[in-house]
Amino acid sequence: MKNKYKVAVIGCGSIANAHLEGYSKLSKIEIKAVVDTNRAAREMYMKEYQILNGYENLESMLSEMNPDIVSICVWHKLHDVMTEKIANYPSVKGIICEKPMAIGLGNAEKMIEVCKKNNVKLIISHQRRFTPGWMKAKDVIQSGLIGVPIRGEIRVKDGLLNWGTHSIDGVRFVLGEPEAQWVFGALERSTNKFERDTAIEDCCMGLVQFEDNLQFFIQSDLLDNNCDAGRFTIIGTNGMIYIEETKIRLFNDSSNGWKNIKLDLDKDDKAIGGNTNAMQVEELIEWIEKDKESRSSARIAIKTQEIMMAIYESARKNKVIKLPLKEKNYPLELMIDEKKLHLYNKEKYDIREFLNRDNIDEDLYQNLKAQGLEHNEIMQKIHSKK
Ligand SMILES: NC(=O)c1ccc[n+]([C@@H]2O[C@H](COP(=O)([O-])OP(=O)(O)OC[C@H]3O[C@@H](n4cnc5c(N)ncnc54)[C@H](O)[C@@H]3O)[C@@H](O)[C@H]2O)c1
Image (cartoon, rainbow, N blue to C red):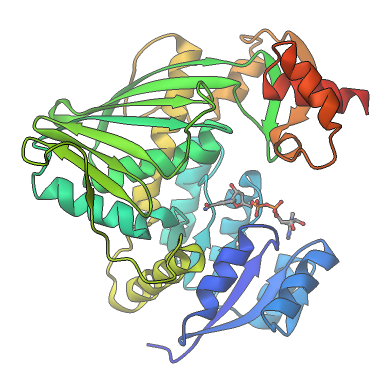
């Protein structure tokens, strides 16, 4: 048992802030270093969190800092590569890797193997498992207030891997980690769409069958309105529950319509930013010290990874996919390589560039919208003219 755990964060972008905020709330943590290839990015957090050591590359940081815990906050394709390097470094006891766990099921499996071999505890940052809404919803469902759960409904956007991973993981969490048996999926990719350098679909949907006749249905990028990775609905034999991170509503035969359920919210617990990350770190430390597995462990997270990959594989093979999934590569990339997807527009674009409308000519945007174009089509047109 250590008095203080030495921590380093790799990748000083948007999500690193939540990790740093979480670590900085804990007395057992000493933030020793940040790593980023971009100097301005690492210096920004060094200043904000008074961190003395900044590195351009991971290897130098590992050998000079000997960290106990490392956060991986770089883009998806680097998650498995960095996990392997970090897990093989002798001082490391725990890794918190961002979602999605990896691209492809095989890479996720390798992450688990290398961590097991080195006795490193690996967490995938599905930090919403620590939100008050999701935790309370789990209790409500377990206490039988909606009867036997039979159906989950998820609507997300910005790529299945990006938001879908949180919501699929969330449904599994509140339902007590049921095992998926088969998956049926469909997708469209008629534009050359990427998210954080990973090929993604224009839209997709998946039906997932669990044990005991429980199913859930996920729609991704099919509806732009009212989507959020943090919300979903679970329907049971005797009612239903609508779940958000800081709010839940119950409908059953004694609720007299929809009823808000009181949550244990701190006064300033708006969403939770660093709080969920801090709780996640506390569980990691408990796992390291007492061998009590964290709710965000990679062993649990890989089930979500498998479901997402199975949705793509089902679309690739045009059939129901029974789990465990045999295909270890990223089925969407295989579909692209196999020329199964016809692009009406071949120009590559990344939706990260398209989320921000700050430097966009608003009149032109509205004009194209009035012509009936969707947001992505408008952004693609505007970007291709630049
Ligand atoms: N859990 C969540 O709710 C949540 C939210 C946002 C992002 N994420 C995940 O976090 C990851 C990072 O996303 P982001 O939005 O923070 O990205 P970002 O683009 O804001 O930041 C990534 C940073 O990594 C740095 N970087 C790139 N290659 C590097 C290398 N080889 N070594 C060191 N640094 C390197 C970049 O310079 C950049 O500063 C993604 O996988 C994303 O899916 C998770």
